[in-house]
Image (cartoon, rainbow, N blue to C red; front, side):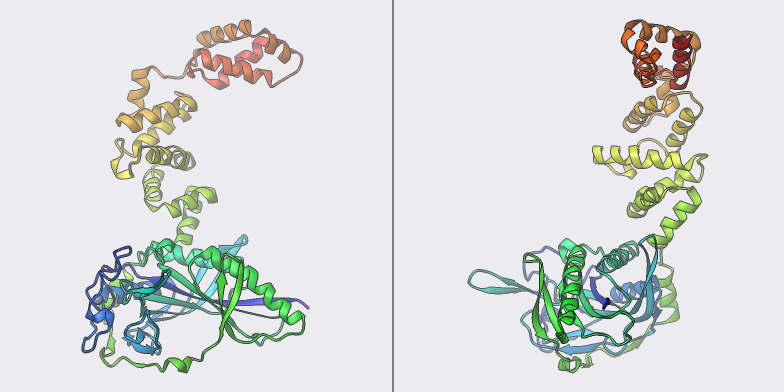
Length: 474
Ligand SMILES: [Zn+2]
């Protein structure tokens, strides 16, 4: 029998706000333990929460970016549970009225487009972090109360690879939109994976296994690559799967059972009494909507369409937004956008990295690259010399024309001068000359290289080829 996997993901993303969700403590990673805490985020008796407007804004913005309906009505509920990392004994979340619903994420997958539906993206708060030492444990509450958005998908994902690509697409969208930095190293994105298997063609879902608290996308992929065959094997051997929670053991490369699934009512959700529900105004939502940016996939498709770029070049400009914007500034005036993309990606980016500077520090104007391309396209300088000119332009800010003039780099297309170089090369290398005459075409390239050397790279390579061939065949 053939089986298929049914996968849904719940992704938790820390929002990029300056302060926490209900208090003025800094939302900042890496501070000494318990230095960004106050009575509100510690949940001391008698304190009152005040909602962080920017967190609401980023949640609504995420809703727009994920093609969701964004609700005007905002309400929070208490999710009650007891654990050391939640000193309040509850977490505030939008259990009953999520801020956004019914969206989707589209992404490139296996040569086509895949689409995963989003049930909801809602706002909640992060909790503290437990640390375990040799003889004792500790809790750092710096993270407690940091605004956290949970994005829940429909079970539309069918493989480990698809889960991985969805997560990357989601991350790209949220980073693009300025919603979150999604820094995995800093724990800004965590993921719960729901996975079941069923015989292909069966409608009813199999028993669902939840793999909790994954903190890397590759971990999600590895866990699913292990868990799906594990479930299939249990069924194939006539066993039964039960709804349960498992954890991924990265060292052993296996999932391990933690507990059988607790039920939703265990959390005894109820409306937060210290925060009245409220309505967002049309004007407020319109302002948020005005912040919606072009999504990564749309940008890639546009770069490929408008500038005839190959997919890898377009992708580079999706990942590196400032570089892409810089390229666009040039490409709009370029006769040859593909050449401009090559210069920006292969030369400019490399030089910036090497010099440790940014686009803002560039000494030459964007038109410099256009001028350089024109010098090559018109045959005034060779592409090899162009590399040298670019290096000089980057270092000094001088225009390519000035540099070529000053250094005497104009390509030698004067037949008389080239003939001389060719004669010298032929005289100095009788071996390759004999090879060529014996039919080894590759020997011509060697001789061509010698002429380029004699001319210090300034000879017009096409002309050199013609002259050499004529002389050798004649
Ligand atoms: Zn606080």
